[in-house]
Length: 222
Image (tube, rainbow, N blue to C red; front, side):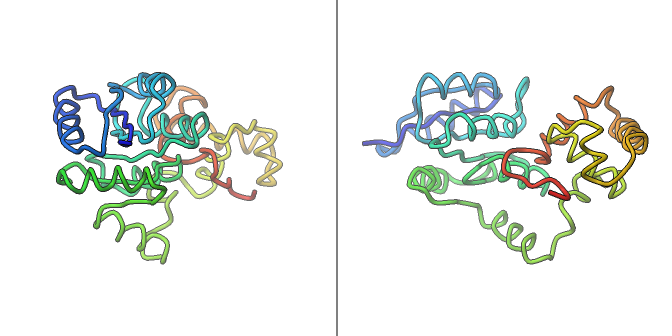
């Protein structure tokens, strides 16, 4: 029985080519396509694929946000990322959100098909360069993830942002970090200015897109 796959990418011609690549394999059946994260959630709810193959940069709902929501709604569906983004922020945000594999666009046809079949079988799959960077990260060769993601923030501002992204109110952040509420408000104001966002909801969205405050991640001090 072929592995059922749903595709998500905001470039129709790329989806067309990717679908042709997958359907050339008798072991794969493409059961749906989406042009953004919101469409992807609807496609998965309707088609119940075994595997989702998705880009990260998409309009409305980003790929990272869609992965996190898919992990919550459909934990049995494996997610494989296929993207141009090879930076650490994108990579670790996707993994924290629940992706089971991460390939860079430019992977050949056989590599993509093998990866789809592997994640469908419960394995984790990463391209060679991506795998080396994961090893570097967890062996300490890379700098702290939060510093890389928001280099303009102080360590305390990053802690406040991460807790804000996890849904905590100022009073809860103050208790968690042993600060006064006034100090927390000052840190939140500084974060909004440095991230150039209008309010705390927008700051939280930026943080979650970068993988902070997403399900399964332990906030600082937790």
